[in-house]
Length: 203
Image (cartoon, rainbow, N blue to C red):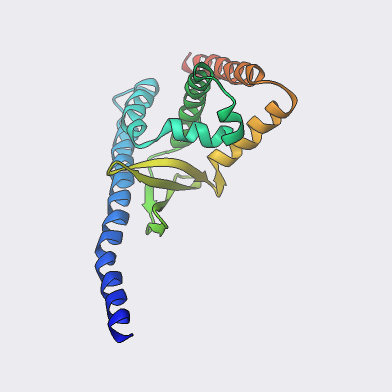
C-alpha cells in the first residue's frame, strides 16, 4: 500500500511542471498578442481602419472560429446543416464576432491591460484580463484549449457574459420560430447595418 501511495505521489509531482507549462504557454500567447495590440492602439500615425486591420491580423490566428461557430449554433442545429450551410454560417459568424471583439478593443484610450493569473480547468486554461481605459474597466476572460500543441481560444467572457452562450441564445430564438435561412438573413442584415454605420463614422 505504501508503494502505491508513493507511486501516486511521484506521478502527481511529475505532472506539476507539465501543467505549469501549459498554463504558462496559454498565458504567454494571450499576453504577447494583446501587448502587440496595445502598441498598435497607441500608434497615432495610423488611422482607425488601418489599426483594425492590423489588430485583426494579430488576434485572428489565436481563435478557433469554426469551433466557436459550432458551439454558438449548438450541436443539434449544427448537425442538421449541409456542408454548404455550415460554411456560410461560419463565414457570417466570424464577421460578426470579429466586429464585436474589435469594437470592444476600440474602447481603449491609452491605458493598459491587466493580466491576472491563469486557471487550469481539466484540459483547458482560462486567462483573465482587464482592459482598463480612462472611463471603463472591462473584464475579458479568454478560454483556451490545446489543439495539436497549439493553444486556441474557443470562448471569451466579456464582463462575465460568455460570447458563445450569448450568441447561442440569440440564434436559438431565431431558429425556434424560423429556419436557417432566417438566421442567415439576420446575420447579413446586421453585417450590412454595421458597415453603413462604420462608413458614416469614417466621414
